[in-house]
Length: 128
Image 1 (cartoon, rainbow, N blue to C red):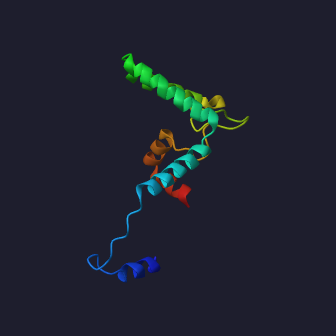
Image 2 (cartoon, rainbow, N blue to C red):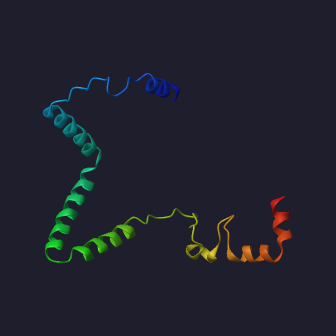
Image 3 (cartoon, rainbow, N blue to C red):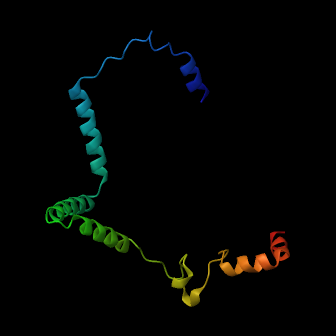
């Protein structure tokens, strides 16, 4: 942090600095393409294929006048296909999905708030 401040303090004023030479366009494009290819190599082929197929489908749906419903239904499908599975014995954060509606340890519920508002000394005793 200090080095940055020192470098900033010792930077000559803008009107005395020489402009950096601009890189030729072909070098800039070559760097941009190599960066893009590096990012694309990190994407699994199956995922890339699914994205391309979805884009084509969205384009066709848009041309047919069903673009908005297609995107909406795609989002719903995406949510439901990525819900995942809980391991055996693992509890959900939402007690309605747990066996016997069991709550997580430390979960704040309306009943706890009502009880503490009716008897504030009970809350003070729990905090000690």
